[in-house]
View 1 (cartoon, rainbow, N blue to C red):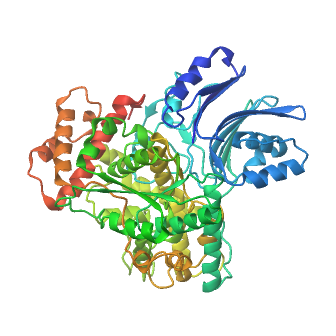
View 2 (cartoon, rainbow, N blue to C red):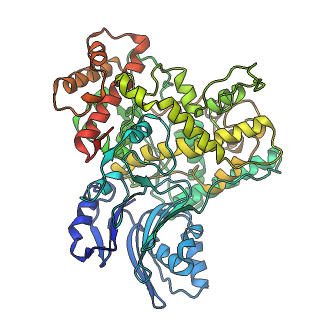
View 3 (cartoon, helix red, strand yellow):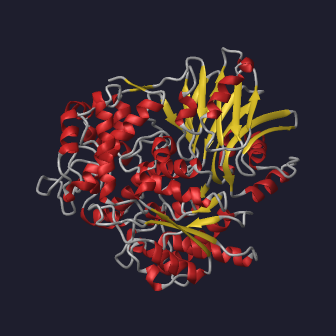
Length: 629
């Protein structure tokens, strides 16, 4: 984990602008607590903040050519890449990850990304060709943002590293607010006007001729020829390889353990790797809320993780740590004041999730700087929502049995997770219940989501001859990879990196994702439940209670006192005439909510509405952004 940033401008002498990139890097202090490194050229500045061994910066020179690399993350194929490059006669020596990327660039040019595997974001400057290349790993697990200027380009690991620059465009228009409230993520889009993200599996090239953006990898539709038993074996093989690759040469890596199927499967495989290496016991970490009380009603619920995680820890003989949290942790002034910054500068309606992850990672960082997680299994293997949604309707809103002639019931096209949320949430978009009706009418977020969904559906890889149900489930899987995964990546990377932890995700392995993308739904859920293949692939490793445990969300505080706290915070915002969010609100509705008695059946909705207002206010106050509608 590291923080990277830079500036390229072909009409300025950047050799005297070192302070600009230092200001960019200063915003990324949490990502890289080590020293700042800056490479200075006449038309390019590249900087990094030091992180764990392997990431950071390198200058590679070979065979009369050179490349400058700044990098966040790690490569899982470092050894094989080293051997491949050595086979081409390159004197690679014993390099770190940035050096390997540099040698790969000098060997294969812009196509070098196809030879890199792992969780990474990198920028390569080629002095001779005066070209900047930005790269992001295939699943987009590490962030990288960029923005064109009049004569150049700015980039950084997080939006703040770009927007701090005096030449940055900091305007948020109606399109940006739609993206903010949509509860999805349009590929490549940022909230701030003209701020973009390098696509997952994407590359951006910038030189004097202009800018080019492409994808070097994306899932592809292929026939699946394996039967059930072979599919289960293949999944096990891919998972074992991915877990071992993510551990790499770091036996001190820990693991975030919930006691559910996803994290427990990774824990079992990781513990086996460490045993084979005689590298000691796996360290596992769990959290939960002690003061649950009469819990806030709502859909985001589940049993406490602690007893289930303890069962897994005993079964695998891990060195187990439990971090108890309470409502006071969520209301801590330091945690709340940095909340949006720890979410890659993006307001969200449920910040309790990244806040809880932050606090767990803060505890983990006292023991290790890297941890495995079971995140993304829902996206890769199929979630409960997909089982329900896919059995009833497709992403285009047509219910099963709809003849397409008006005889069946139809709803507007939308993403499956948004459709599920709308059944629980009355406002036009999640967390928008206190924003003005005039603003929401102008934004028309349901139509925006429908348009984006149709655009994504048009790019779904298709398999000729696929039946209607498998085609529908392939669409849902693709939509989750396109939109929901980017949102999850943003929150998980933001929370973990802010606390100094390199979160490694074995389920975000491109070989595993590609294989499962083509497994028919009848095999993915062969027993009628979600994640049937994952359960079968790890059945010999885990207790029955874990294999049969119902899915549960990451722990969040659910004590009613939290809602009271949010009401007080909202009242402070309304009382402050300088609060930048107030012009966007239905102030009368916000005041009614503050004064009304707490209604148990509405508590979850009210909490998400208040959280979004408070988060947007913090975003507008603390970041260099301006709303222009």
